[in-house]
Image (cartoon, rainbow, N blue to C red; front, side):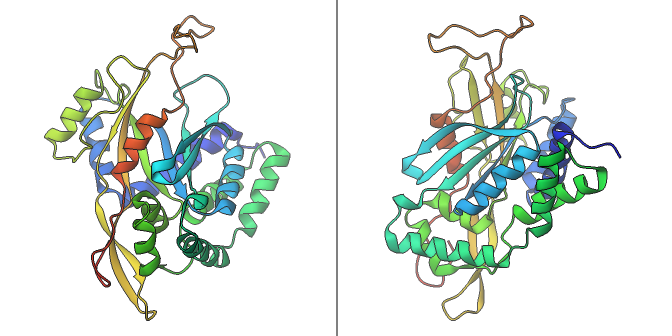
Length: 320
């Protein structure tokens, strides 16, 4: 039986993860309709995850290699207590799907708060079962692909199991303690290593530029960040919706189930332009066309993080 190569596996994973995202994020479904009504096409530029667990991050990176994605550039966000990197397809095609991975920087936390985060990570690890998934990863690494049945199982486990919180609900006290240090990290724990956002390419969506798409979204009632990141004419411009406040199961101090309010998932729009070298000269592909910038800018990303940042609770039993 023919094997699905990395590019096919990547497409299958993106379709599976995107369907899951659509189940949870009404703004995403609305935005897909806006793009369709505009006569454009949906191009998912990238998805992004946040995790506090180095073991989850390592497994995610290994699984992403099966999709033909490789770790490329590192980014640091000291004010958010996050360190990040991008996973990119080999080559210069900026339209290939990418993943932006952020790791909660535990060394930047007070020791007592870092201990609470590690405790939650251990609870999630204890509840996870990745034995079959690991076997599929090994098979793909050895063979260079997977057959149809294994490819489907791989994509479903990746999106539905690895990108989830398999264990008990987050303790309210942990959520509050983490949010007091970093709202972004609190949102990461509340969501788990799922896509906190996916990103629609502005030009593919049929808009002349990001201002036009943002204006069309605002006219439809989307709540956006207060500014577009990246000046006009620069290599990367982006903005995002504000994450909806969602009910999140938590454990109260006495062990009983409770509910907190957190901000977890949103939709981003992006406009990429020509890349330049270190001297500022424009870069061109081998075919003579502009080489489009395909990585990320830390200054832009830091502001995008604000779209999903859980605030500190006011008082013991109230929501975050």
